[in-house]
Amino acid sequence: MKKLMRNKKYTILGIYFEIAKVSPIKFAVQYIISIASSVLLGLFISQLQKVFDCVADLVGNLTTERISAVIWSFFILLMYKIISESLEILNGYLGEEYYGRCSAHFLEIYNKKVSQIPAIEFEKESELNRIKKAQEGALAGRGMLHVVMDILTLYIPYFVTIGVYFFRQDATLLFIYPCVMIPIILTNRLKRSFSNKYSDMTTGPKRKKEEFVKYLSELSFVRDTRVNCLGDYFYDIVKDERSKLNKLKLAHNRRLILVDCVTKAITLMGFLIILYLLVSRMWLGIISIGTFGAIFYSLEDLCSMMEECLVGRIAEYNENRPLLSAFIDLMNRDDAKKQCDNEQDIFRSFELRDVSFSYPNTNKQALKNINLKIDKNDRIAVVGYNGSGKSTLAKVLAGLYKPETGALLRNGKTVDYANVKDTSILFQDYNKYKDTIDVNVRVSDIEKDGEKGKEPKVLSLIDKVKLSSGENGIKEAATLCSKEFGGTDLSGGQWQRLATARMLYRDRELVILDEPTSAIDPLSEHELYSLFEKELEDKTALIITHRLMSVKFCNKIVVMNNGTIKAVGTHESLMKESVLYSKLYKAASNFGRFDLETV
Image (cartoon, rainbow, N blue to C red; front, side):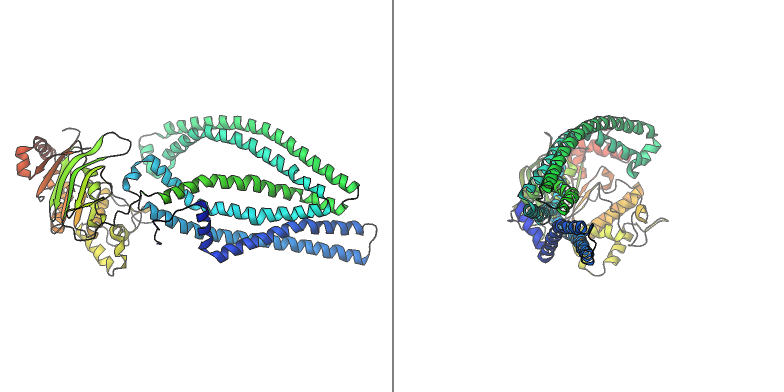
């Protein structure tokens, strides 16, 4: 992947130049062809006049010479049409191919930038909307430049060619242009005004209808819908929203009919003016009957090209501009930090000093003045109620979040972020990729792709976590984890074991386990904790868990509540000194699992 230039300042003009540089020769060839096609299309009217004039001369005076002139002029007209159409097809093909290249280029830049945005930004709805808009903007630049280049190389050469023809016949014929343009511009302004109002009124009902249609049809919802017999309930909501949309549509259509009547009258007036102009010029002998026929025949093409240019293409440019601006804003942001650039010396210790952290759009601190030191080969259990800040602490230690206040020290030196390259982490809400077992394991350290002998290591880990055992065990690394794509669906417990293998494959000094056994039975839990104890023997580990009976191999236990650390110690010392820990432990002992709602 191309490296993102940190000091590069993106502008609309700069992006245009970058698009042209993707393949300069193809870019130039495409628009040279566009000019040639446009000029030929314009010259068609001149040749059409010659055909009509030759046919007019032939009437009442049938000679071999004049028949030959009609045939020859018609042949040239046909060649104009064939060559022009062929060039247009070729131009379209080149445009599609070039669009694909540009899309790949700018999506690569976009993805590189997004990968450097601090993880906390993805907690903000406004930021997610901006990022989504910027993704669309990564594809918008090519479309905008294509509009500009089409105006310069297709529409303007066509209008200039036609204009030169009009002027050579009679300068007053240039008045045809405003007679065509004015109705088109007025029509567009009126329709756009009504369409914008209609769009604003229908946005809410349309979104609601689409959302509830998903509850009726998408796989992720259909099971709950069927089991709970919610089909009729959701369908009634869909019908209500559809009814609202239909009423708005009917009212909008009535307005459009009125607008059409007005605009058609304006268009008819322009047409009558053009017709009068042509008839009067022909009556006075200024233009021939062939010129009259050629211009009259070409009026539809002229109107079509004018509407395309002034309405369709300009509207396309204006629609894409905010998207490209969002992409430019994202690329020019200086808050995207590369979180893997910390010093790369061997991990020895990590310390949090008075660290506090809050999520966006909340006044409550998720972490408050946290002080914690993690030394090499420590095994630390973090326990506490739901919402006490345990998972947030894990994300700070994993380098995903930057503290609002306080300091982070790695090996005694202050850093902005924890070093993600130090850490292998198993989150409670791990990702389930619809790909092979092999990919699902190796995705935790994809940089190892260049190594030889990857599959034996993956198979070894599958065996270690007992994913391969049992009647429905997974025996091959190539097994696809998705029945939807022709593979097999894994149970919750199998996914938990696969996520564990993924964590072990990423061989790092610091291991963070966030509820690592939440989806498996007690026997399997015991087996996995025995595996952790063996595999993490030479590692530094931090384990977040509600199952306090399973952390006996930890040398330190951290008790959290309301975003603060209430106590730190061993199991024995905390049972004597921490009322909260004692309460948690007794609850876990009584129920086999720490039930937060009953404590």
